[in-house]
Structures are given as structure tokens and as C-alpha cells.
Length: 173
Image (tube, rainbow, N blue to C red):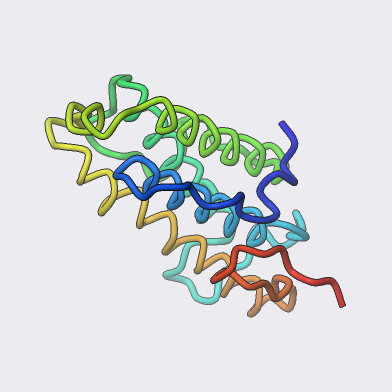
């Protein structure tokens, strides 16, 4: 997979439907994750702003698990009853974690692209309709990606400035 495909958002869909809106949310999540992790160093993985906070690695593992959960749910695969805060076998390597997370988001996007709005209505996650996927793991990913950006800044390695409103890649200074 070419990770740079997430450096900027693709053109928006021609028509807003439930599925195209969700696709845009997934695209925006993937792009923000791409830039939150671009230039991140393995040496920063243990950084946390305080003892009660997750480390950057912990945040990235959690986002990885959330992306996998969303992908499984939209593919109709069985879900664990309680979300695990980390994947069962924790990944230590930043590049592997980054690639797998973006692959999960890409697979989620592909699945959504093959669905109709009616198909969405039949998606059940832990005995709940797909709406809970939005206000649960999808929005949780956005929150934790923001934390990664903040932790990076505090660790002295801020992300490049980008125009998330337009979905453009950051301009290198």
C-alpha cells in the first residue's frame, strides 16, 4: 500500500448520501492520521505529558484497534463484546502500526464504497445499529489523533502545518 495516498484528501463525492458522507469521514480521519504520524520518531513513542496519560505508542495502538474494529464491523465480521484498549499482540514498530492502521481505514473506505444507504441500515455492531459506530470508534479515533498531535508538539516534534479544511497536504517550509 502506498501510504502517501493519504497525504491529501481525494476529490469529494459528487452527491452527499449516507455512504459518501461516511467515506469522507474515513478519508479525513486517514489523512489526519497520516500527518499526525508522518515524521514521528520511534524515540518519541514513550512520551506522555503526565503519568495518567497514554503514551504516543498507546494512543497509536488504540487508534489501530479502533480502525480494525470499524473495518470488521462494516465487513460484517464478529466483534469482541468489549473493545480492547490495544490489539491483542501489541505492535512495537511505528511503521508497521502506521501501515496497518491506514490499511484498515482503506479497507473500511472500500467497503463503504460498495454499500448502498440501505445496506448501512442492516449493519449491526454488538447488537446496535451502525450509528453507534459513528459516535463510538470513528469519533474516538479523531479525538486520539488530536492527542497524538498535541503530544508531538509537547515532545518538541510538531506536525507540519496543513489546511485540514481543504484537505490539502502541508506545505514544506
